Length: 341
Image 1 (cartoon, rainbow, N blue to C red):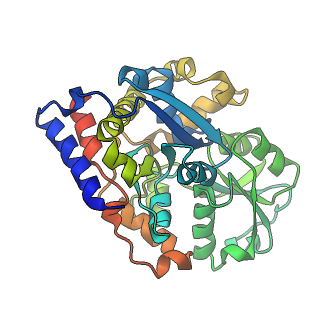
Image 2: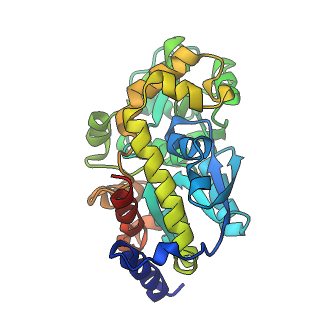
């Protein structure tokens, strides 16, 4: 990929901000396929809001969202060509650059991972430290997903390697609950609403929690960009108006979430996302609300924090020179925020 093309695309969006009416031109691509790993998760709530409230349609887009068991599966869809865009963890852009593939995140959904690592009270009632996880089975949404990455980071801080445990893909909904409660796994690294449900039922003991900014900063030592929309850099270069339309819808959804009340949420979120417990879902939303990005902007120091975290446990990243400026852009987001003040 020639990044000069990406620079040209971003220049076009800058022209739009200057009133040169670039966005008034037809979208390069009206039908856009988005892959997501666990659409029911609060991690991806802005995507659901943009879809359910018709924000994509109002931008002239026909969006088809395909749901996968985890973020790594959604990434595979992008690489394989069956998806145009992924709603997934920002750190995948770093991993893919290390593999020689140019992926760029262009709008942020979460400014904290919202990922929780917990041990089973059934199989590990005497848990005391990370070292106790050696030889245990840890459930993640899917191997290679952001839940797996956070688990690897926590293990590294505790002196363990990823190979010291066994990772099991359990998804992000009822299957994850069943895997832990039946004793198939000893611990789980997953997201809400699943983790709040396990916590409230006293099925687990929380080890690491990144649902708040305070806990995220304490764990990673800095801001940690999480859920985002990302695409092949070539897609952004060839479809700048389409990317802008997607960004507009997502920023609008993020701003809606900043003021939405519980009754607003339950009216919009599909019933099956609530896992049969509306009150629990709302409790999880309220608890992790600050983790959602208020404006879609990537924090200035966030990418460096993500890179440092990946380098702590991944030899493939540690020995590669990563150009973080090519893993994300705020150019589209700045225009969207000017439109939806």
